Image (cartoon, rainbow, N blue to C red):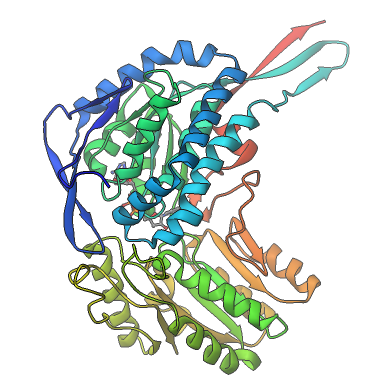
Length: 485
Ligand code: NAD
């Protein structure tokens, strides 16, 4: 691993550079609670430099044939795969997630993101419309210019590459801002981009806090496209900053996702899937199913087996190969989780599993931010614990009696990101899926991701869609050319 005193610099115009103000923030390892590196604490001056570099690079990059851009992106994907172990370890240390998860999910997915969009741009089509006897129309989809790409801490490289890859694949240049809590793999990606021969200025990464760097990106008049993933409150600020400048904006925000288990489900599969969807990455995946609804006749059996299986998840040092539950990303997030567990009890909930900080994991992790899988029963559907995003290893379980009732429960939230439905009745699966207000409905599965499908949320979970054609369209401007006959 790198030296402990590493200062993560910005990456502007193909060079690693110090922030103009020469200030750095501590980068803390969640498993130990101690700083292990520092990250640039940049401001609007650094964003100005990054935008100038992106602006300069745009003409050359956008004019490059798709096949040449594709080749460079494929090179990045290959290098991510070559460096899988190094990147997975860096992601695990930076976020607290189990090394095994970073190795099997985060880093392979980052490579897939680049490979997917590198090849997608070779297979695009353009629409043509013939206006009878009058004209012929065709659609040009051109890169928009400079894309501002802002991402959160829970899946750092996975989500940042999900934005960078489509943005630059179609010919834009970019200014990216990873979360200040988890900057390490974005830094390593810049090394990879250089090695892959990405021209200077196509990807610029500016590190620092949300208000100082994210705010400067959303306010910059030359950044006309903003792709943001993060919390709903921040999403509102981003939308407010972008609206007066008429920026094109995509917002992927929070969730409070329902996970519905009908009594006719394959309970073994539903329980295994629900343990994953509840506690993967310590519940810090925007798609985690934090509200579990179980049909009353299967309720007792489900709870018994679900609690039993969740209790066997191995909480431990994220770098230990056997660990299934790592650390929470920082103290603020850990305190938020504890706050909601207390609130749930005040609201009448009973703790069926977890609920208290664990014993010290080991000497190295004595001061780390750990919290065990926690299952709460007996809460009313409309209470705060059931309505507000916790974003930690905490789920509630509620019984229901009818399809209609559970659809009402599922939709009784401001959010609308994703849901899961477990049933063996095909007609019911279609009926329920159609009525749930979420951007994704998984039936008898969770987190199955095909990169071609539209991805995004309804209501307070976001605006716009990522993935496949949606992303290619988002990062381009459609222009109709009408030629008279
Ligand atoms: P956050 O909103 O605090 O931060 C997200 C990013 O925005 C960070 O890089 C942050 O520095 C930056 N930021 C903060 N203030 C800003 C501002 N005023 N202007 C511009 N940028 C600003 O979110 P987080 O705590 O990092 O991530 C957790 C949240 O992200 C959860 O709510 C989770 O549900 C959501 N999330 C959503 C998806 C999705 O696809 N819908 C995926 C992952 C995470």
